[in-house]
Amino acid sequence: MTAPAAIQFTEADPEAIAGFAGRVTVLVDSDGKLSPLTRRVNRLTRGAVERCVAGAAFAALKPGDALDLAYPAGLAAEAVQVLKLDRRAGADEARRAGATIGAKRPEGGNLVLAGPHPRAHELSFGLALRDYDFADHKTAAPKAKGPVTLMVSKPEEVAAAAGPLAALAEGVFFTRDLVNEPANVLTTDDFAARLAAMQELGLEVEILEEEDLAELGMGALLGVGQGSESPSKVVVMQWMGGEKDAAPLALVGKGVVFDTGGISIKPAGGMEDMTMDMGGAGTVSGVMRTLALRKAKANVVGLVGLVENMPDGRAQRPGDVVVSMKGDTVEVINTDAEGRLVLADVLWYAQERFKPAGIVDLATLTGAIIIALGHEHTGVFSNNDAFCDSFLAAAKAEGEGAWRMPLGDAYDKMLKSRVADMKNVGGRPGGSITAAQFIQRFIKPEVPWIHLDIAGTASVKSDLPLSPKGATGWGVMALNRLVMDKYETK
Ligand code: BES
Ligand code: MN
Ligand code: ZN
Image (cartoon, rainbow, N blue to C red; front, top):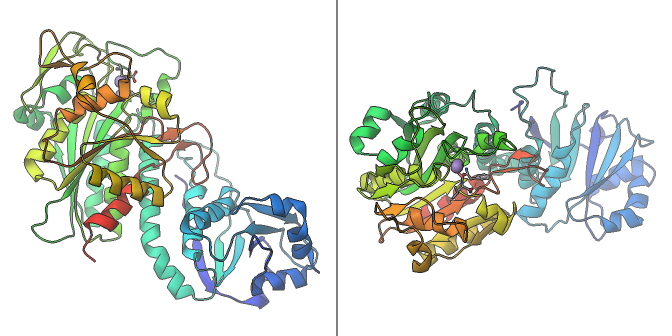
């Protein structure tokens, strides 16, 4: 990514407004009430802000949206951005308002007159999220963007409230960078090296290599990676910031750095999108980064299975039978249903080693979830209503779409195999559900479990309110909140 927006909080200084040459953003309530700093801009522009607010275009604005007044007389500014945001706006609305600023950053810098707005920190967070730009592989110099200054009533207080949100933004950006990265750059080795570098933040990071995985009996995971030149790996990240003996929350991610489908090869059209097939692992990594950066008082372990699914002389074939770490055998009907094979072994290992209080897996698992829910909601599957409800509440609070899907015996039966304990596909009907059923076979019944199918939400083809197109970082905010609300000692 290009360098994130440099955001400063300064004391309100009415004298500094007239001479500022970049863009001046003013906040206006939907009832048209102007804050003191906005009134100052209005006076300097001889009523231009008031005329704008009285017009139909302002009335039609959604909260968080803005109108631009170009080259306003009375100010040195290149534009005044009139942003609709209520004094009583919630976090979500304030973030969207910030994102409106972040979506189009002026070269000359931005002065945001937030004044006493109680959500100024959330506004700065939304600004940062939307400002993200993945330009690492563009040779042209990125377009210059000036600094952002928020004039606020209590700069120290706002800066303090913005601290944990900056850690959250960094986690989201880490996830987005991983998901946006092409597969010739983000190999399994490169991915593992980026995670190992997080030891600097105080995370404990271990890398299990193919020999280790073979010794553990991870035949399902190893089968997926055996056609690739890149070695399969499992990376274990531990953040033990909570009470000494408290059982951790475990986060497990599918990290298929590229999914060709293997011998059951995918069609050429759109195959390039499968660079994002490590999205689950990317989200787990971003959450772990955030928890370390904000020194969360919770025990959380993150495990990712890193493999590449390639067709090759050594690749696994349809019809092969593999033995999972759990001991169950799987008939591989379709080598393109590889994510569940990876998760089966990493989930089993996570439960055996860490005895977690709860386990959440994330995976770009099925195209079928996109048919069911589009790109608006992640598919949520769970064996525990209370655990599931706390996750859904966290996702809702963070504005991340999540929708619960059913599980049941009838779906599980669709995985019956003639030759092995199960097969890896259940047919086209309910494809996301049979995938979840497969995974549930590797969850101990007493462990509260949530499976998140993020195939539709990890990466999108058009801009979102808080994210430019491409990787979204979906789930980092919701999981960070779940940790705050349910696992953190205050
Ligand atoms: N990685 C894909 C799922 C996917 C599809 C992710 C589209 C993101 C966007 C997964 O490994 C896969 O290929 N699933 C198959 C399963 C099928 C063979 C049972 C699918 O969805 O077609
Ligand atoms: Mn696949
Ligand atoms: Zn896949």
